[in-house]
Amino acid sequence: MERSDAGAVALRGSAFTIGTAVGVYVIAYDGGSFDIVARSTIGVVALWVLAAGILLGGWSGDFWGKAAVTIATALVCLAALTLASSRWSGDSESALIEFDRLVTYLAVFTLAVFAGTPRRRSQMATGIAIGIAAVGASSLVYRLIPGALPGAGLEGYGNEIRLSYPVNYWNGLAILLALGIPLLLQLAASTNRVVWRGLALAPIPALAAAIYLASSRGGVICAVLGIVVLVLASGKAWDIALALLLAAAGSLAAVFALVQRPEVVNGPLGTVRAASSGHHAAIMILGACALTGASYLSVISILRRALRPSRTVKVVVGVVVGVVTVVGVATAHPVDHLRAFTKPPEKFPASTYVQSHLLNANSTGRWQVWSSAVDQFTENPWVGDGSGSFQHWWLEHGTLSDFVVDAHSLYLQTLGELGIVGFVLIAIGFLTAIVAGVARIGRESGDEQLVDASLLAVLVAFAFAAGIDWVWQLPAVAVIGVASMGLVAARNRRVQEASLRPKSLWLVRGALALGLVAAIVLQAIPLATAIHIRDSKQAFANGDLRAALTSALAAREAQPWAASPYLQLALVREASGDTEGAHGAVRQAIVRSRSDWRSWLIAARIETRLGLYGEARDSLHRAERLNPHSPIFTSAPR
Image (cartoon, rainbow, N blue to C red; front, side, top):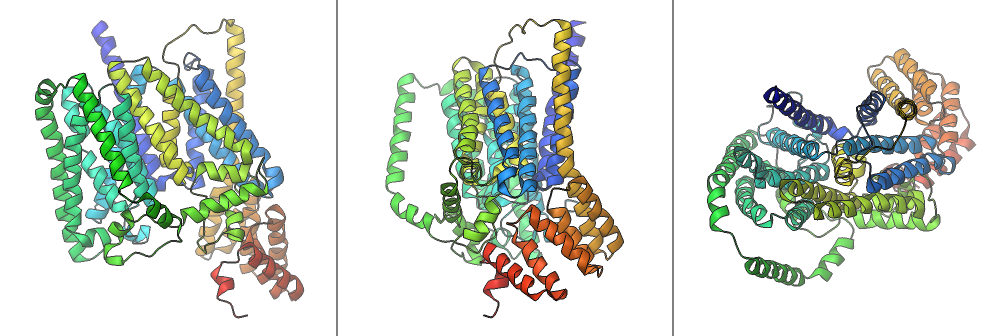
């Protein structure tokens, strides 16, 4: 009976690990789940799982310590502020979208806290690592063996030189893969399941090759940062270093295989030569992965016994590494790099684009975008201009002509959109999680400490990435970061539940479940709107104006306070010849989002057709003021 119970536990654990891996892969494979339909679907699923678990008694409050409660409270308050900001932002639709995003992440965080046992944390970390490794493999297959993946032609990603498949954003892909490296290293350094050590180390060269093809400096920094945190916090620095040494050698071999084939790296892609070179590179990278795993598996036991340095040797090695790092930074002319970082974006030669970009210190516009977010903050420092308002601020006040939706920094965008109050709330969430993770590791040892150190490494790397890029808006990355936040913040020991009577406990669970159902409804509103608008656009493209009108009207019914349904309705009615109806619809869109330049531009066109030339001129001027860098206006004759 005991053996049967142990087998059942192992089977459930394997299912949990595989389910986590599949979830990570599916979220990433769907374009990073950036689309509102994909992201809202994640939220609805997570909330239903929470509601069912709480109502059926499957979840308990055992792991909700002070840290988890503090983070959850900060996220709830941030969500409330985001929703309330629709009152002063002038764009209630964007505020509701950002509110739903926070609700989704709060649900993921809560599920991670509930998975608070050491075994579940280890299984979840393993599942995330496997899922990320699978994403990296798919990414390389897409580039190196075109046509091998169904429905993944190069044309779907615009023939971009920088690798972005399947996340559809090169930096997002690289950062996602970087988060997997500390998780794989901890699996390789664990004391259990010796055979799995080599398999855990084997994918790292492939991940390094994909990060190189993405030409992502942020991805490289996140990988290094995660490794450093893992080494310092794992309690097994020497074992990690041995695994890292072999993984680094394999990664260099994999990258070298790409360097020797520039047509795979910088294009032109889609040629016979690129395809042939890609096949050869794939074989060499696969060989590097296999040799890395096999060599580690064959020598790890020997190295672990033969190379056990004393404490003095470890200190000396640490000092040497620190000195070399400081000297390297000092001799790299950091002041010159800072000047280059703040300059406007540069163009890189096409023949060496990936390498030139990767080794260049220019921020490619981030400095200008960050500066604009700070400028927005100075206008309304306490509660900002409202959630989702940065894109409109940038179009009107930005210093570059690039179209930007997000500020490429969660913290600066929050500062501009929700002011000091919003910034403090998001800072409390991240800082509390990191402090809780450090404290947790200080109370642990062995493999449990190693697992939690890898989760802390993921959290720190994600927190950094959220400060330099828009990965908070990319669920493929953010879900992993938020899950790591919940896993490190969960209480690390089971405690006696509060003394509630059975009837009171059921009342609390019922109230929580009802609250979650209400959150699901709020998630479903923008989801339904997005689906109807998508259907309307598709029908419009196919020439079926009746179906396009029906879907646009359905979107308006789902979210009558939003601007996008009215804007789509205006376009459909204009195409149908109902110019008066189109004018009424576009004016309704303007009332709901006066800062959206597109509505004003469409209004100017419709008003011109109606002979309302004075109103058309005013609408056109308003559109130009809201987006002065648009080629529509900069190229127009004066």
